Length: 377
Image (cartoon, rainbow, N blue to C red; front, side, top):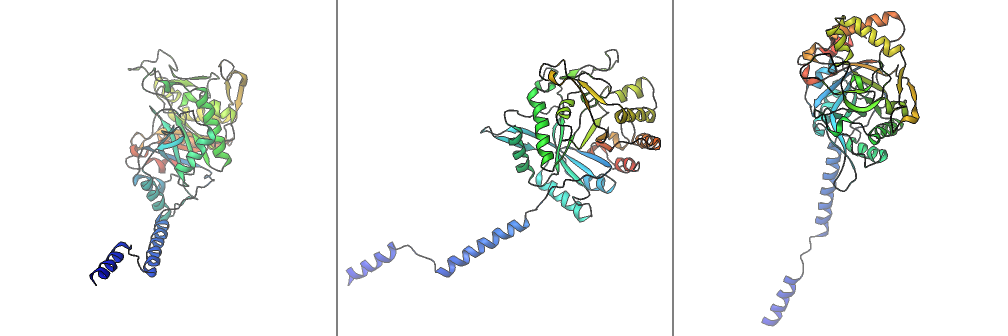
């Protein structure tokens, strides 16, 4: 008896316990329901390919995401540029888009705007690449690979990409030079994005796309407009039409151009502070120059792009003029004088710019700029 009992107990203990069939099915159904619930709770976004006719563009500051974007849109902003991502290589060498504001926060703000009636059909959301002192893209990966990286990064959250590649405080930095590979990547990636229906913009400091000179240089650590303009410390970070190269090679890939007329020692600052030209008068002349003077750039002296020769680039329907927020006033030309200039150009009946932009939401403390700038339209 004891032997049989021992054998029976040993057999029972060595046999794995199996849950009843109905319990296994119940666990699987619970897991499936949880997965479906998580999928339903995840925000779903789909990018838009259209822009408003007239633009009021506001840049976020570095990684900024807060309720200022809500009030800015309510006051007239219809393009928000979130700031800023980088194009780089991952540890295994593959193309990667990284950085920028917290994605969950951006999703929440875009959702809040939609609930207030400012959906993706009314407000465009772009992600910028670059910024002052930021590295330029790693060009070891192709434009197609970075296109795929952008789509993975965005996943429908952003309607497109804005280029804001600039220089670096260290005069000898490699980022004070736009390499051949970098400029070609800018153009090729922009074309891929455009062809896929994304919005593409660029934000050159004034000297990086300068209607008043035909010179071209890939360097952006030059002095300008003259060495006798005394400023302490001196400003030696100007360029000569570096952004003209991707425009010349892919003129249809860019939807609008944000001209940074607030670049230090810019034409705007020189004319209004050193020469004493009235702000509105200067801006009328500058806008008319952009509208009616062809952007002509001579690439013939550049070792990489000399075959392009003298190029004339059509920008008339892409022009957006930009200011710094300067506490809600605008600079180096105030928002009030900007709208005055716009109205004067409008009265001439020979066309006008696409709109305005400003840097940045964080510096427009009372949210005044959008209302003043949009009143021009």
